[in-house]
Length: 574
Ligand code: FES
Image (cartoon, rainbow, N blue to C red):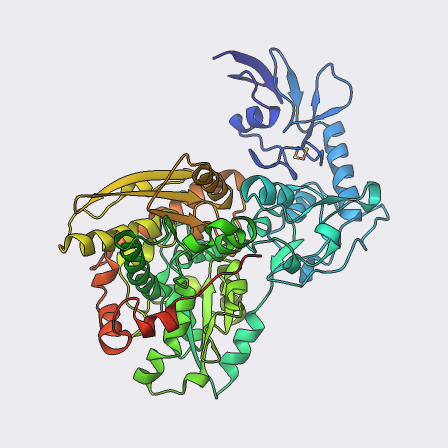
């Protein structure tokens, strides 16, 4: 490898050719500030916050877009650099809605941190802060007056998610990021995944805040308010309270939910197990009876909307199973009331989800049974943290608590649903047992684990070769489906998760402050889920005793009439 010697701020360093000044400085523990830059996703070199001085060159140069060369001498904090950086930040702030105190990103805003670090105390320029109205049309709320035009959201939406619901429009002072015809996001092909929220350096993109709806329900004595928490929430919620990424805070989370006043604290892991029973049954049926293959999972609402917009020819391939969130709601308003002796019309179901698209899914017209909506309110992991803080609960000091019966018991398989490959692995654990008629010991399908974009495996079950694939994010799903369309690949079963990494990296999860550690944080959250899996007494969904009881007492057969009415749905070409 060709190496290059250079000097940064008086320190010598040798790095590979083609390294940027930004990367070289990092090796010396010099943190050059950035705003628009996100490695591999958004590298336009446009904001100029990262400018540095290069000896012998005129002007200043963006460290994120300038490659090093032999003998280069760089200054990252000279007075010229500091002055320019300050000036650039003042100009950005002049065009920024500065209601920081009431902004959901207050204290977690990258622009705010940059301004603090660079001594911005007054804004000497008059700017333009009336670039458009707040878009509250759907679960993703957009505020153009806070947008700093860094382009990160545009890049993640087009390059990673393959959606392109937003883009730059107009020129000069009127430049903005907006939708086609400046319509609300809800009318667009936006899949509500919220990846734009997570990547936005400021508060220009946020989820719709549904915490007030939940507070009101908790205060209503006529309602019986139950809550479910998705698998991935417990390995990320702790980050909001100073725990390391991946720390399992399930016990404290349950205790906090009790303190908030929920009548019962249940678990989406339970209904993830239920999903596996129904989906596994559907897969076996389709394989044995010549049904439409490949069967494609349907638990990620972002992926479902993406498919409804872009892959009409695959709609019949989608599993008819509702997602674990919706299955939970349907059971909480049918079976649960018969056991708890409550009026189903008074049961109010709250979901705590790592995913902003779950807000959209809960509001889909078809997600109700006999006039009762499956789910009444959805809040994200971040919104739950906010409620815990509002209630003055000292989360770190809570004693662990356990979920309530009868919708709170789960298997390891239900837990790993929260990451890419997890639904596939959970399904294979059950399908292999069902097809062989044995309880198999070999249950770790490691070929479908990990953060690769597309994972493939062939699993031999009872003499049958089952070909499976996992698409990690909608961008990768698109590549995989295009290969199938072209006749270059075929499978029996495909898992698709709308967000890269799966739910652990959903749009509602805690914002990762140091974006350079995103992959480490994803890996830590995934590890947290597999640690729970191995610690579970039961690691297969069909061995969950409460699921067995649910079928024995209420549902009857998997895929039977009652299961169909409550737990299955249909999709719409859009
Ligand atoms: Fe380098 Fe924006 S971070 S130009």
